[in-house]
Length: 388
Image (cartoon, rainbow, N blue to C red; front, side):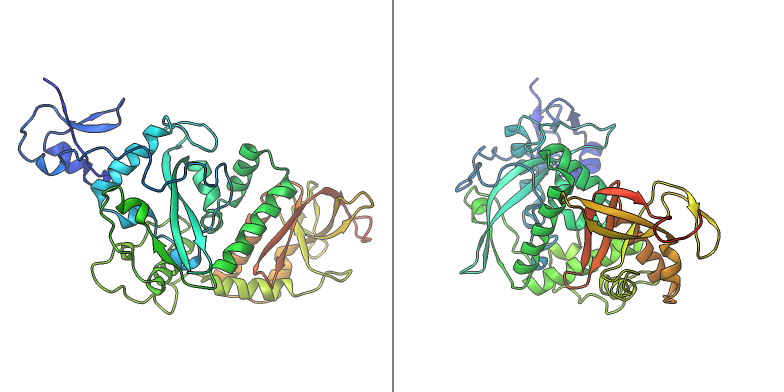
């Protein structure tokens, strides 16, 4: 007897299984072993969604790049705006037309490597009307999807992995990849200065039920709340329930949870610590030396991945020259008597900024983000006259 296909949202799979539904790993879809099974009618399959959505442009913005959505639209994606059963149909269509391969790097799913296939939206921004219009849906693997949402990767402590994946897939040199990320954040700041109206007509034209998203201020409050949760726990938080509201969203709390450090607190602390000028003038740079040595500030041993102060210059050939200074940067942070959670957050943020080998970082107070360069790392103990 022919099996009967079902549309079962992921959140309801256990309930469907208890009612007798079965999983086909090859088709990656739930089915009823026979027609007319009581309890499974609610998941009866709807018609397949066409492989090309009305108005979709599958050539729009191809490849892998950092694709940051404006702040007011964080955590408001297609999945949060459609009914769960419609999302299951969309997900199946997107993965199927891509041949179950990432459209950026070509990799398939790998449970062992915890690599999944996920849907990602490509948006077109109408500056004149303030409209953010959905133009395309693409299938991306977990690694490529992390790159596109680079801001979230930074929050989750995955900046180094995301940058490495971007370089691996695109072939960008380190400096070009960092420049690409900076340009993406500059564009993000420009777009985040205004509110955007979402245009999801590409979905409604295909007969998909769209749940009206929250207003832009509500979306931003939900995004800020989620960011605080992720900073506090050190692990990704689920998109906020307010992404599909049935009632007005509560305002985000004015103070972070106990032990958490808000984005603003961390930025102010980094502004303070990095405002101390380097011994030779200019910004305060830090790096991770390759050589073990004694810290001249306390005569204790230090070795990678301890962070040291550095000076950064351009060579005559235009390359960066990073000269390590044998003092431990943590001592400089100690001088400012920061509260313990803020102190830890500052050290963690600096360590994350130095994830690329032979790199140096400094905090840019105007852009409120780290500026990182990669170049030749030099032992500067003799240059600054200290003992090894």
